[in-house]
Image (tube, rainbow, N blue to C red; front, side, top):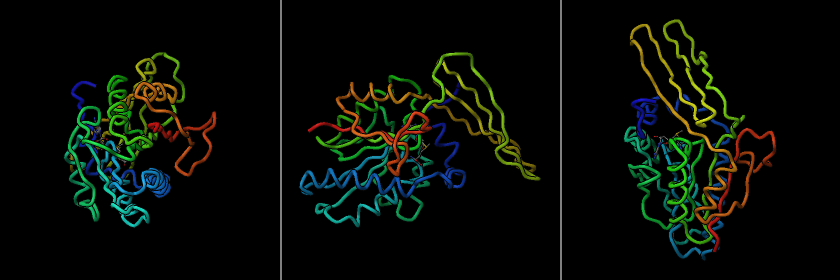
Length: 266
Ligand SMILES: C[S@@+](CC[C@H](N)C(=O)[O-])C[C@H]1O[C@@H](n2cnc3c(N)ncnc32)[C@H](O)[C@@H]1O
């Protein structure tokens, strides 16, 4: 999309993200699952080092803030825990900083493919399709490699993403639907799906009686689970588990999303 950059999505959605996505499923299960994975690695390492965790595309801290709280009260973290989050959008990070508990997350302004903070981390994760914000395979692979490079031996990279419905290359298709309809406001969701480029781009177009037009653009370059596995393998990671969701439900042929746990071997 012409004019679309690394901070475009975050800057466009920062003011509405928590409100619009307040109904995202399994937030608690996600935090619990991530805390358990971090604990396991910490215990395995004898609890002697700070248990450092990094979220890629941390946004408003929807997950990082409760995870920091959860790890702070986890028995066995003898040297303590730190949750870090990187994001390209200063507006998203400002939303996180303003929330209760937001200051507990170590915020880094930068690109998850090129500017990751120094490791080592016991756990790195990208939730809710965030890896697909990177616009091409090269940068997604670079991000996975950078994360792998910062993991302790025995540490994990966890990726949550949707499973593409159909990866058969074909003509692009356009859709328009109504997201919100009120007497003085309408939000239209406009999108274009290009299966050949493995990309969906869209705009939320908000029209109000008094405020004119507001555009919120987004762009996602998807990868199949197999493509993610190949990127992880190239970075020296092995697929340890794949679930159909954060509660550990089995990943099946009809799963619409996956949580993939990649291990850096000892
Ligand atoms: C879908 S939101 C997810 C936020 C949070 N992880 C969650 O689950 O609620 C994606 C986030 O990734 C950020 N982002 C997009 N491209 C990025 C990049 N190249 N590097 C770091 N963050 C990026 C956006 O600013 C946004 O905050």
